[in-house]
Length: 248
Ligand SMILES: NC(=O)c1ccc[n+]([C@@H]2O[C@H](COP(=O)([O-])OP(=O)(O)OC[C@H]3O[C@@H](n4cnc5c(N)ncnc54)[C@H](O)[C@@H]3O)[C@@H](O)[C@H]2O)c1
Image 1: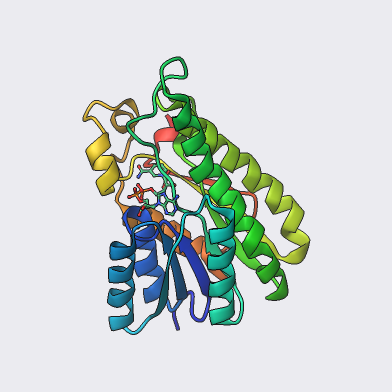
Image 2: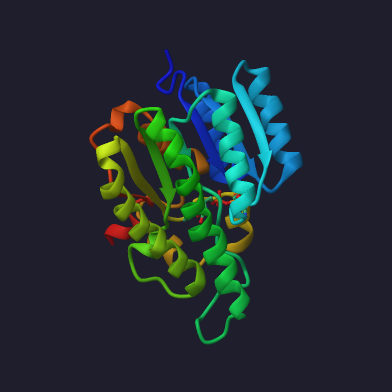
């Protein structure tokens, strides 16, 4: 029996990086998966890979910041599975366009807030009613070390992830009576393709990470735990997975 055997799961941003690593780990633990991403080719390829190893997987080409599209993806997934147990809001990430509050193009602020914060908000909005009907569930949001300690240089993204932390705690209180747990992972430097391309060797967070940078699988392991019943007493927790960087 897998640790997620039979769990009906949505993962957003699943076509690359941490989301793809999580999809593979969740599938190996027996989850039934609905994967959401903008990148159709990579998403469909991942679904074929997971199915060939015996897993149940669906792909929805969906923009997490589009309310109608997210509602459609969540309801299609829940109908296909006959309910919903886990939502992993992972889509997001800083871009090169981010920087100092005094310099960045204002559109970058709204892009970051729309994907990282509003996308998370929308996922919760549409998934919670299905989880209520299933008698409970687990929501995993994605914050960042930038929301836990002061870090310079990505001010739009940092603001959006701060919102994810506050939202996670608020929803944890609101939905505990319905047995819906809401937690967040707060990664530090994780070497996905996007981050490898963005990050300088002398990046201050990277340099101050006691264990050195992490791999996508390091976050996927924590997500498996949060999705599983092993974490049944955790809600409202913001869990750093940063190689010790936030402890420095
Ligand atoms: N990698 C790190 O060092 C790091 C650190 C802290 C937090 N995080 C967070 O972890 C999450 C995953 O990061 P990653 O490094 O794996 O990123 P990534 O770029 O490798 O993967 C992100 C995936 O999200 C998808 N996506 C982006 N915008 C979307 C949208 N509007 N709708 C649907 N899908 C969308 C992309 O197509 C991509 O497949 C992000 O929320 C990021 O902020 C990552």
